[in-house]
Length: 460
Image 1 (cartoon, rainbow, N blue to C red):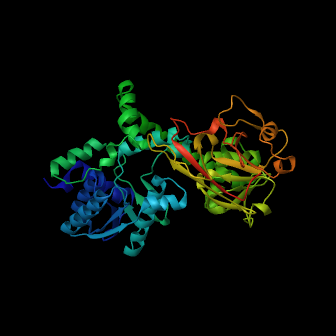
Image 2 (cartoon, rainbow, N blue to C red):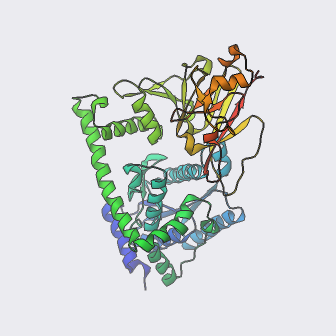
Image 3 (cartoon, rainbow, N blue to C red):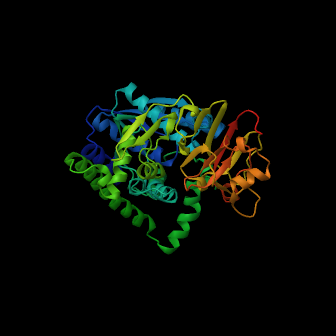
């Protein structure tokens, strides 16, 4: 049987021609990891390409996260592409080190590096489209990942079949297999003897997505055997409603009959999300809520930039202070970005890390570890104020910070020079020169950690 005549191939061909509007002789970049989904996608496109004279460019990104297995994946993809007679581009980068430098999760660093690579390949090949092999199970898993991370409708709607590349808005990402069950791809691979590589890390219980795949989804499927269909239908409804809300936000702005601060709450949040994207900042919910609830108060976001909402909830980018000595009385920081700032002769470095099962943070002088999810998405950094309350780790209850200073024999003049950091809910989680706060300590169930490094001169 000709693989180009199968139902799956016909479905792919219809999408590429009628929805993605692929033209004859058009170059198409195919993202191939070496796994089941991308190898089936490559096999299908290989069968269709001669009919439409499509030029396929196979692109493989090696994240260098799995030792020799990562190199073997790259070699497998390169050899397969050449055997089929297609151009191939392979690039490698140590994503773990990239994540550490940027202060972001390994998953986010991998995604950014991979999309940057694919967009680069597309530009070099003169291609306007990148085809990816995401399938229906990927959508369902993504729904629960984002649900557990607290995403709203925009996040829960999942991936679009056609969307701009996050690395280059002039390049389209095509996901023609989004509605295809993984079992159908496995059947196709068996029928046409499509070789692929298994990623051993998919069996690890460590990443959240794997725990969802191997633990949560089987459990929920006992209650709802048609779980995948239900979730995919919900995502389709969310996509339609998200599109309507996005259009309504634009229409409200164009009418101009009321400032954003007077819009319905849902549209206020949409407006601030659009403003953050305009400024190149990822619109996290807690950041949006901070800006909405604290107009005229600046917050430091990704890359050391500061943004501030005015009284009407329009967003402005502010000049970065030379140091915290030149900043306002209280400085707000977006923790999800990670970064480094200076305060006179002090330096603060912070980083959010995903915690591996059973991992205990290593002791290091000048470094403290906190449960990042208890702290929230942003913090305030300021000097001590009379009336501040604090719960030192190991203590039985919260107390006045002033009483704690007295117990430590900290001179009155010195107290006002001590810095404190407050969590998103207003509670103090760190006091310069003192113990961390009990409610924010790392516990057995802590999954995301805040690494907090404070370098300063001697403290009395």
